[in-house]
Image (cartoon, rainbow, N blue to C red; front, side, top):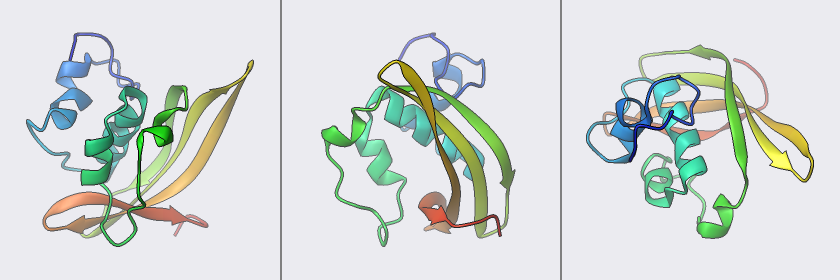
Length: 126
């Protein structure tokens, strides 16, 4: 890890932000911080972290080909933190040829073995 800015857009150095989670030093305490760290994992190509933070019931088989997208920025639209379920709406911007496009998702997170994990996208805000 370096002192470069964290990909999640927090304006903090990577080592003081998502790098703490990606290195295994600690685990996100909120669904939004988990979502931000998962975005950073996609940017940095950290496949083991993505597997670790995906609910085992919905986790697909992932390989390095899933990390070929050139992500450019993250925008958190809104988040709702619950005790056992949380929701984060975001836009993850990526490069598509000469154009920048966005993946827009409303994501469901749940507590699993006392840790937040990504479950699946939702069709609408609950």
